[in-house]
Amino acid sequence: MSHEVKPAGMLERLSHRMAKRVPVGACAMKNHGPLVSFTFDDCPQSAFEHGHPMLQRFGVCGTFYIASGSIGRRFKQWTVISEAGVKALSDAGHEIGLHSHAHDPSGRLSTAAFTADLGHNRDVLSAILPDKAFTNYAYPYGRATLRRKRQLSALVRSSRSVISGINTGILDRHYLLSVELRDPMPSREDIAALFAETRNKNGWLIFMTHDVAPNPDTFGCTPEQFSDIVEQSLEAGLTCLTVDRALDAIGVPSFNPETAMVAA
Ligand SMILES: [Zn+2]
Image (cartoon, rainbow, N blue to C red; front, side, top):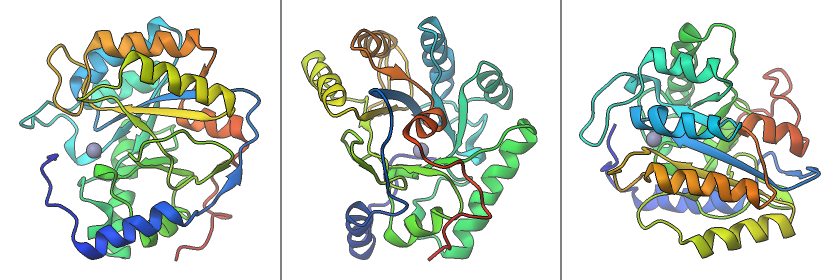
């Protein structure tokens, strides 16, 4: 896994633009109050060591999207959580989400290869957590295509992007918007404005980050920054839920492969 993956080519970029514009599995949001979710991609060990206890301190849970081929491995920028860590997160009530096995940009794979890789992701996580279902997905590198988005509608309940914004009104559930906590970090004022807008529009604000460390990678934040934002979100009156519980609150039907949309 590297965040220095080859940039998308023109066709992939065009298809990502289409994915952004064309809703798939859209539904009207029926939540009774504003929601916030904290999500982690790849789950570096530091997200487990710092992010997880901070959420616990505030009595809330997050969603950790795991690329199963990276579990326990050391990369240039961080070491990824171990199998025991994944189990400990789940035992503490956090949601474990899908993030591919090989962490390839989704648009690079054929339809069959994408299904196989996601199946492998599920199988590895199921071997660690036999009693859990893994129903929510985050695109590696945030890179989607329209074809992949349609395919995912038959495979998972939701798919999270890294395109910044608040989810309001009609939920495009295979292109969930999120706000990244990374360098440069949004200011306290920017965050307060996001909370105000989420409240005013009765929306769902999803944060995403990677490592939570005193000297984080470009794609992470410090424990203090993370803790401040969790605290600020609760003070702002937002209800903090995992992605799966937030989808329940919004009124998205439970994921059932039998009734899922037919893959494009
Ligand atoms: Zn990732």
